Image (tube, rainbow, N blue to C red):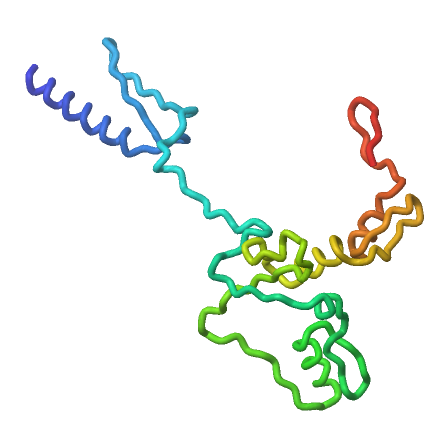
Length: 197
């Protein structure tokens, strides 16, 4: 009788150890004993401990740059210039030097692409040239050249793109194109019957 009790006790310990090694949806398993036998229940809806939750690294929000980044201030003329890099053979202009170098290959001219160095490349951030702008402050610089160009056009540039339907004006052509696609159309219908553009 005693031997049977010891075997049952050992089986109980092995079973409890196995249950503690199991993982469920919440990462926990609980064991409870009842008079008529063993009842195992899992808690599926409890929250895991705070230390078990993985901490996600947040990316820098626009206007909150990496403090170690190199701050670059461009003039309004440089920002608004299109096709700054011009081919000396055909006078075709390009926005980037890399594109001009690739174009020069077609004329059988000497060309050289900038190679990324194996050293860690320092991040660049760009400040707005408009002194009164919040993004003129280096601590609120924007993270890429396209972003600062679009910002400068939208906030400080001439709004030369006009919608034919509603006369709304835009400084960035892509904004105007996106608006033009949906302006005046009522495409979205709610379940209640209301139409939204």
